[in-house]
Amino acid sequence: MKKLVLLLSAMLLFAAAEAQQTAQKCKSSCCQQQTACQQGNNGQNCCQQSKTGNIETVAANEFANRIKGRKVVLVDVRTPKEYASGHLKGSMNVEWGNSFKEQFEKAGIKTNRTVALYCRGGRRSMAAANLLAQMGYKVVNLDGGIVAWEKAGLPVVKD
Image: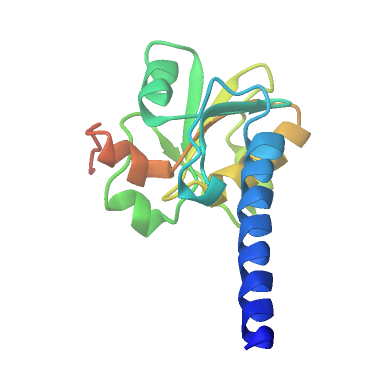
C-alpha cells in the first residue's frame, strides 16, 4: 500500500513538473516580445503575435492586415498540388524543400522587401522563415497557416 501511495505521489509530481515546464517554455521561447499569449494548447501555438529577430509570427487577422496594400511579397510554401486546392489571393508558390533557396533566389526578390509566408499549419513556413531571415529578409509568418486563415473566415482562391 505504501508503495502504491508513493508511486501515485511520484506520478502527480511528475505531471505537475511537466505542466510547469510547458508553461515556462511558452513564456521563454514562444512569447518573447509577444502581444498576447494564451496559456491553452499545452503551451503550443500560444502566441497570437511574437517576434524573433527578422521573423514576426502573427495571427490570421493581423496577417491579412499586413498583406493588404503593403509592399510585401506573399509566398505559399506548400506543394503545387496544395496550392492549387486553394491559396491566398496574390500569393506565389515556392515549395519548401531542398531547392527552396534556389527557387526563391530565381524569383529575384530583393532583401529590402518584406516576405509574408504561409503553409498549411505553420511548420514549413517557419522553417522557410528561418532560412530567409538568415539570407537577410524581414519575414512575417502566418501562425497556424492556411488552416488558421480559413478558420478565421478569410478567403482563399483557386485558379
